[in-house]
Length: 305
Image (cartoon, rainbow, N blue to C red; front, side):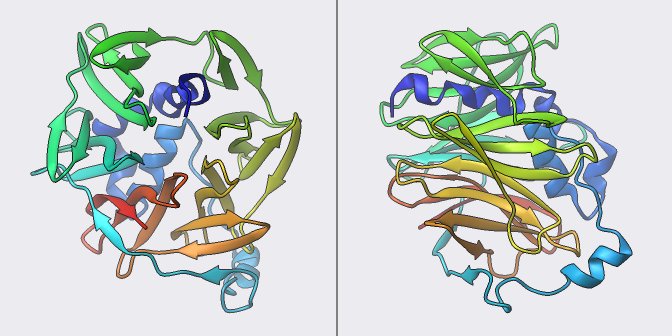
């Protein structure tokens, strides 16, 4: 994947997403994992379903044949000793993401995981950092807060760091060779561009006037919205060169489930025994990256194939 096709990843946490590793009251709720990733995406908390909609949406899309289920082989990627870890991407056997030892006292710290070895990425002059993307050349992108607590996007090219800064974080954007273009879903209250492939197809999340989140795809300049069947909200986060889309949705019980959208069909993806599963990336080999929450509310980075 070329550099220009993935530098947009810095938007994922620029809008105060670094605060994931800091004290936030909503992290104490049973939806801590969902809200934490929403913060990274710069989105308002998902609206809880109304009593009326819950009666309709309690039906299961898989059971009704509106979507299928698929079993993946999952592996955790938890930085040693961390209480929370998120894997944002997985390329060439290297998983990248962020962790925190204690969300109430310690900041987010970027890490890489390769061949069984965890390494912290030391971003110069940073208080906190998050890695959000890696390409086939090993270039890394992410976000950090500097010593003055100002957020910046960054590119790490073989140890050489460059800042990537935006004038606004309320719009999606595309960086094509240093030329920035805003991406706004028509009529949306806000737009987050979250994934792009080598063909320039873009996926992301748009919020309507009620702050309900929907997935979208931009292909050839044409916007298309989509929602997982019976979901209350849908987040489209990653897309590979085959056009397969990874993300997650929230059901009527406020539980998050991962999904893959491929060839016009939805597949639900859940880690067995987890209380919620959120997919963030799918690469060209069909390998997945994301995060899940266990029954003790611990968050774990995940990879799957």
